[in-house]
Image (cartoon, rainbow over the protein chains, first blue to last red):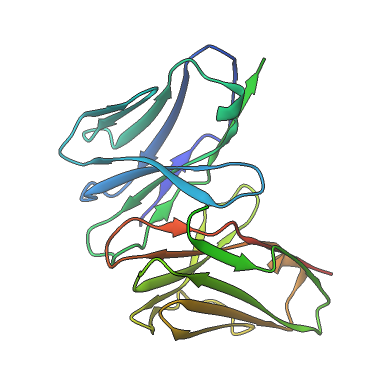
Length: 113
Length: 111
């Protein structure tokens, strides 16, 4: 079945890099997403990557995709206290109708000053 | 501000109450969704409406009843809920297969 897995917690110090990992099961997914949820708020799309890409960089964010291992990671450089949030990995497997994202449980990132 | 507004933000209700959650979007999207977010669980898709017609139910208990009167408004009617239904209920909208825009959620507590 379709499943997306993430570790639940990550704690880093301000200024360090954070790496949030995700594994997914459907190798036919065309898009893979990272959403960010700040305390008391809904989810906001942070970045996404097409399945034909290995890497995408956007300022402090780097997304790496290993299709062979079905592994997706999000690296945040120079992590700030404002990056503290829950980060969700999500995929849209082939055959799913539009918008039916399959989400992981979310990784809670805690940034210590 | 994502353009998707949910009310109320917080709701406390007893198991015998009837209440409704409301979601509104003016982004011109043609699909709307209800998700349930429980602690340490993946987001659960509850309902999808595309062009105002329900296309996905996902075997949600009948004590949750969605209503989509038009492409801008979505409701989730709640009746005889259980304490385990306490969660954050997130509304989202999209344009066909495009990205999801989420509201800030309605935090529901069932006593």
